[in-house]
Length: 156
Length: 156
DNA sequence: CTTTCTGCAAACGATTTGCAGCAGC
DNA sequence: GCTGCTGCAAATCGTTTGCAGAAAG
Image (cartoon, rainbow over all chains, first blue to last red):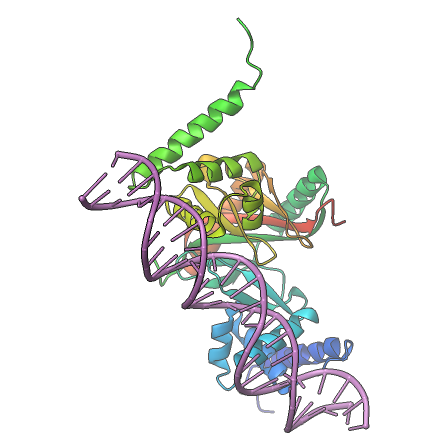
């Protein structure tokens, strides 16, 4: 038997992703159109949060308003998440249900954002600290964010 | 001798704050005008990050554009810091040189932000994790942010 | 056929800026 | 008097929305 040229894990993961997204959208009477598929694929391939200009550069034929409208639809469906870095551009990434819990490394100069993954030990400390702080001030914890701000290799 | 009615620490801290800000501005050929003084006092009194509408509500006679222009001047001087919560409103607080290192409790519904202070132990863990992540990806650490997102007492 | 999606162009809201006069050093 | 500050009104920029036709179930 011949080994496949393309890593099967990559394609399987992408197929599974699309399937899950289609299902989630369908549950909300939303269609998984080619454009939405392209947006999800773009975000999955990037592996880091993308700005709207970056998304549009990857999909040059797509009008801005359609990109915004469909990213918003994906956000409403819980597939995509919008985050804010240091600059005024919103950044978009797959929701944690479709990726994994992680944090961000943000460049103070150019605004670029990379993903980072914390150790289970740190995650436990963050969760515990979140609960303690929230309890003190009467909040109910939903999630936490840990961002490291610094200079990226290009801006150093 | 009669004890003062107003806690002296409060007034002393405010006086020291104004003095420091005046100096920092002066070093940049900037004047510490009554409006700038009012903005700094507003932020110091709030003890949590304020939106522009909140700042304007506290200083009703001040035109929006002047408030924005002067908050920007204070940011350029390193006196004020702009942060982003969950909504689209920017939020402003005194820079850490004029307050203390702290983190934020953000309401997912109304966007309100409260300050929280982490234990020295957690801070050490955050600093260490920051360095480790930054090293791996070639960044140079400048600061870190830890936000707890949840529901505030009013929105629960 | 009904509902959702698309592209376009116009609207929106937070923030910024050009300008002319006023105020501090 | 030079330089920086003010208020106003207009501009900017990311993002959202109304509309009429195309497409999917």
